[in-house]
Image (cartoon, rainbow, N blue to C red):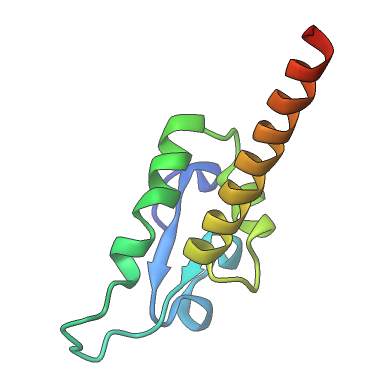
Length: 98
């Protein structure tokens, strides 16, 4: 136990799901084997920036929405989809202003 509010804790580990007491707080990553080109933690930076910016009431809800997926890749896909929808909305509203 970390003696912290579990709604605000993220646990990252190559063995996260095997060793974590609060599985809903775990972000499983590929275990580091000493590869110089391993960028797993760097790839997660945009996710942590998103979390810091939006300050969700309970991080476990956010993590649950990524369950079974690669968080870095999924966030990129969600961001692209959001941008596409925003562009579509912008085009649509521009059409009605004419």
